[in-house]
Length: 144
Image (cartoon, rainbow, N blue to C red; front, side, top):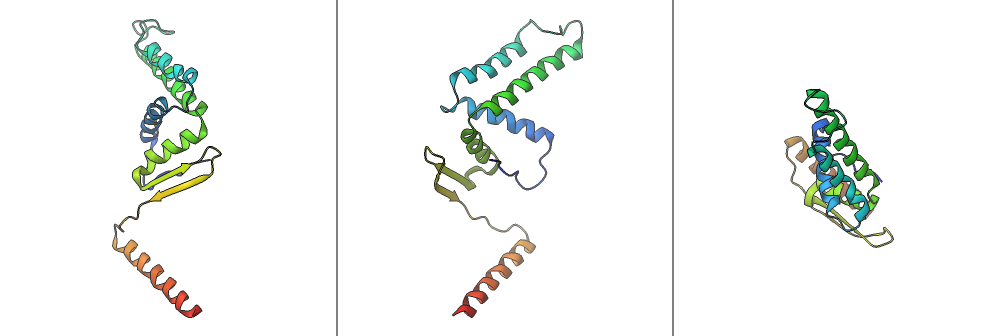
């Protein structure tokens, strides 16, 4: 199951930040196994450890890049191996906030959906909503 991207520009740095926040939320989620939670801990330990595959003192840029690459791969692996329902729930929370919330039972069947209406931001959006409202009222009146 995929969660749609929010409207607007969603660049690479925003995706990286989202993956880090997702990993943080998943780390605190009880649905993710304790064995899997070891992965980000090991990645952080490696990043701050003085032991490196490529020593930072000898190869400055490469020494830092290998720490960042291994940390990034560990976070991506952690996020992808986490239970899908937990990932989808947290991604929806990150991307849409309190506007959209879904509760499911143990079988994955949706039992509650909460969505908040939002006010149109531009005159064009207001005109479009007014036209669709008028059209729906016209159709309803012609059926009677």
